[in-house]
Image 1 (cartoon, one colour):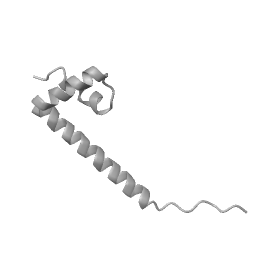
Image 2: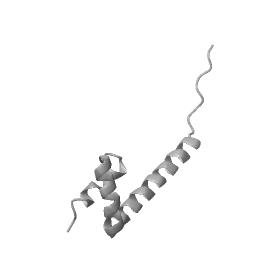
Image 3: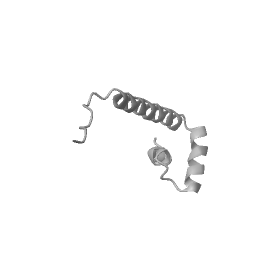
Amino acid sequence: MMDLWCKKLYRFLDGELESGDEEHFRLHLALCRACASGLHDAMQLEMLSVQALCGAVAHNDAPPPPTPS
């Protein structure tokens, strides 16, 4: 069964928990393999997304802006 704290994983990731709840969630992470795994997966996904976006920007084939006449 999903714990009440498990439902707060994405709020924790987004920094939306109040400080007391954030500390409680950190303690929960030490005991809950599902949340620890979910946190790991979400952080990997975020890192891969950033890398993909950086690569897309670095390889942008858009033409240069027009020069002023």
